[in-house]
Image: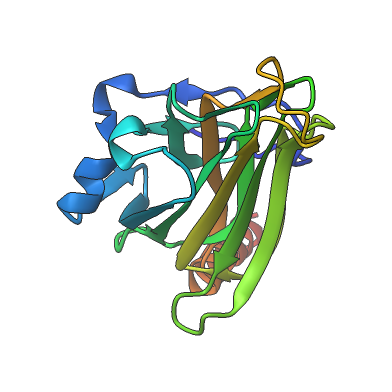
Length: 219
């Protein structure tokens, strides 16, 4: 399926979810497993809880949207009520399949964080070059105020990235500890845009140039 890249990160993306390939996060972690979605390979999953959300409570599902291929992380347990603080730090690697001639150029993040009363939710995302440990970009989504989608261009296109997601929920930022102050997230979507490798782009340009010359000669 051809992908049409949206002109802005905030543009609405049509999601295609491949639910028959969903897997629990703890299976990926315990088996050192990987998921291939299109030409993207996701591996090296790890999770550090900062609350009571466990890897077995998070479902990982392949998705595709207008930006590219990616993953959805969903759970019924991403909540915080009253005085509760909840969350986790999730890390994984994404790389381009060996047979692909593309490079990852953009990172896109979206979620459906909701809040009531003084509740607050946030996902802070950092993209790191695994070969140098250099940070290539960072963004966040949060509610309130409702900023449900974001993204960034990498400082340089790469064939592999390490993604770190810091997911934070608090039931009451005002410290009033009321049970009707809540925050919740049911899904977090992650997709990636890409561009051709320079060598592949040069081959395309050279081919087009040769086609133009051949057409001119024939006329």
